[in-house]
Image (cartoon, rainbow, N blue to C red; front, side, top):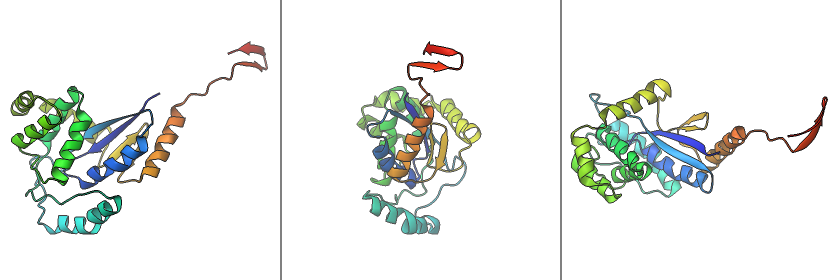
Length: 217
């Protein structure tokens, strides 16, 4: 039975980007299906953060950069100021998912922002990035300009906020187990193994006898 993993993330969360590596390592060779789920940390009209501000500078210096260095991952605090809203990028994700490229799109958005400092709140930038992973640029741009996937995205957010009760990202729902924050490959492997064992039904071992006699199962 395929184990389903849902990853709730936002494209402006550096730990969501860093979490890709240990998760990918942990699921390698396993019967696992990963689905990335939208979560906006600061939806419009809330103010987004500015990279020159003390909060981001301090967080990156104390936590993000040291962690990325230990993991061997290139990452940079993007100079885009203020940070972009991510609703359009997530509406694009819904289009990409329909085309079977949801996970590729998700990875491209994170890398574009945290390694290339691209403005993922801009339709032109999003369209170019979509084209890079093989999506039809005209269809993609039309979908964003007409807000074709606005309602789908809003429903996804409602699910995250109200049904899944997500309060921070990244959050992983591995089978029936919810775990928030960054974790090592080994931790993910243990969680996955535990869930796979939990989902495997007990199988009778052929012929047997019980108190009422013998039978073949």
